[in-house]
Length: 367
Ligand SMILES: Cc1ncc(COP(=O)(O)O)c(C=O)c1O
Image 1 (tube, rainbow, N blue to C red):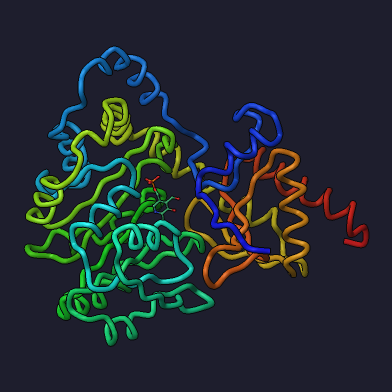
Image 2 (cartoon, rainbow, N blue to C red):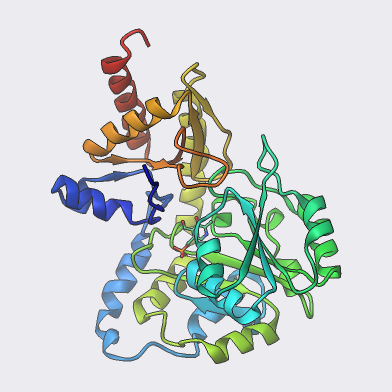
């Protein structure tokens, strides 16, 4: 049977249609969205800004550039605003037009899709197991001047991350070879010690070929509204801004981002929730012969079932009950025995685990 490429983030709509239920009845562990959001501050700001949708959005992106610049201590001219990290990735590849795009697998499917949309050549390299570590030596040796390496840190779907001491030397070595690096940090906000894990200072060096791409859709829980950005060399940002649609980000998305980025209490609540829930899911998914559970640093985890049949049976049965997980059949180097599971509220996490146990008892009573 041919495997259809998964439409990321789109499962919830299909499930609601097929099951004949409203979106709110679906418990979605397939997209890694902060269950605490959207923050109350953002909801309020959206309601208050509704009337302003009669105007075109600010094409200079002044307020959001300013907010991001303040929040991360970066100059405004180095900030590129986008309609989600996905648009930022597309814009960077389109403008850079590298001779080859290096993708470390398994990876977020939009890297390849964006390269293909822009008619770019792709070279894949596997991440090194068991830690999903980037194959830096190979990249430094094989990537050529004019190429672009895409690297996702923290990494979807493994939940692993590399701290600055593990990546600053390889990024420097790649830069010396004239290789650009797009660092997708869409999940970095979930790390409380974000400063130790970001490549922002590499991106801010004059003439840098490192671009940091980030998303607010996961942390603020606004995937349906969309907001992302990139931090890059200012000349690069200026040339991308020249070429792109300046109205691709709507007024409400700008508002949500400006207010959400300033909401310190929401940030602290998220870090506290995640620290507790990472411990809880680890305890709940206690060691079993039926699966292997991967340690995680962010708001999702990867697990591997003993075989494809068991994994598919469980995910199909969960789907029929309105519970979605991400079956990793289309991730290069993984397969249908792997699940990526979002970490959600305590009760939802426990409900997922108990429902899986119940399904297992039905079919494999000896478990
Ligand atoms: C690693 C990674 N980068 C980027 C994105 C897309 O983010 P956005 O919703 O901001 O386009 C995703 C979405 O799942 C992702 O997993």
